[in-house]
Image (cartoon, rainbow, N blue to C red; front, side, top):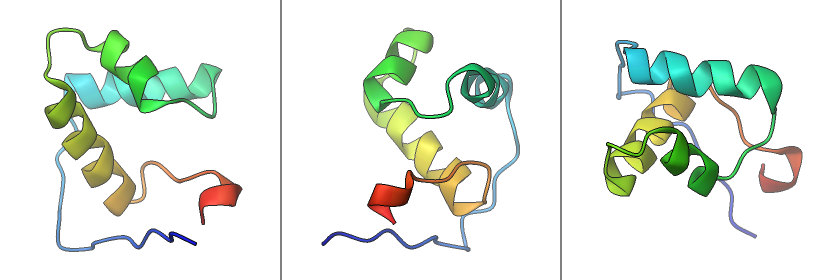
Length: 68
């Protein structure tokens, strides 16, 4: 089983894109990364994935219970 661990050395300053990502989770608590790619169409998928990882590492996002 794959488990995810937070990497504490990736400090993050929140951006407008982060605000958009975090506010989208207020309406849908669980989302696929593909949904978030559509939310930020001007950003490459790899950058969105990297940003999601930084938000996760810093405790702004969490994984579903099944993935812990």
